[in-house]
Image 1 (cartoon, rainbow, N blue to C red):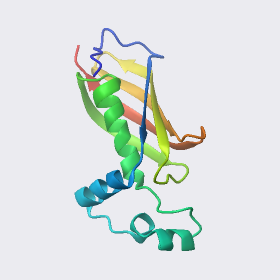
Image 2: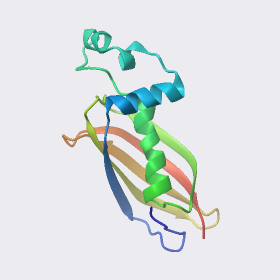
Image 3: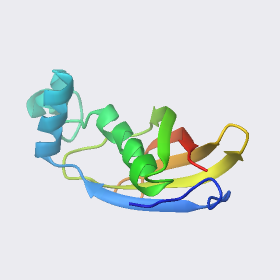
Image 4: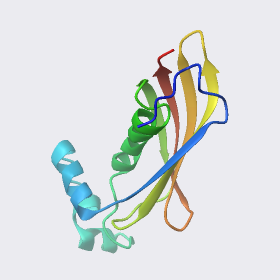
Length: 138
């Protein structure tokens, strides 16, 4: 876990991590949310809609921005204020996702940073993008 503070963060600072989406992660997300949409739960239904398989929950991908802020950038001194997500392309079970965030603004008056973030799949295709606002300890 990183420990950036407001004094050690600079515009342009970036952090990255990767994770693979598994059927188990999908099941755990379902248990947390009770989102029973067949596009996420039924492979035959998803294929009939033209997808390669079950589509990963968008908010499962969006939740990776929480990991980005709380573990990597800024890390332990973070309190996430907001996350704006855009789901650009579908994600599927088995995809390996790379999450990257870059500090784009620092507001020392309010102790808040803005992070431009993106998630790409194993083929380098951007699947999610976001803007995070995070409070950071001084």
